[in-house]
Amino acid sequence: MVLTASQIQDSLKMLKDDTEPIFGKMTAQHMVEHLTLTLKLSVGKIKYPPLTPSERALKSKDILLFTELEMPMGMTPPNDTGELYPLKFSDLEKAKEALLLAWDEYMEYYEKDSDASEVHPRFGYLNKEEWDRFHYKHIMHHFKQFGVWLRDAKS
Figure (cartoon, rainbow, N blue to C red):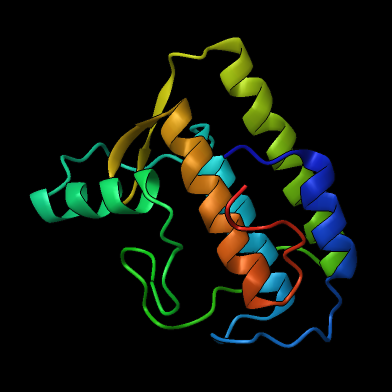
């Protein structure tokens, strides 16, 4: 359950400014920037306070990360206000470049320290295997949201 940069690039090539979501209210650029933020969180570039996940959160983590179930539509991040965040980048292409750079940083971070762990805002500290599983399902979820997922979900 590890994606490659080329698999992400192939899906991003299909994503255009006017690509409409199949579900949800994000624009294509919002989605790409959201994925970038999550990657930065997973390498500690965006700090989230340490937390001890609830028993319910731990059960959700096990179900999400260690089963074949996909992330459900309508799942929201912790502390979600329901409002879209202001866009950081001037256009979708720059946002795509930032996502690919964040992916490279993610891969390098865990190559340098395979024992590292960083805080996930719902599940607490995740190790590399757990982050790999999370990113796989998270990226798949959002690429499916925009109809640009190119890989079979079971792979």
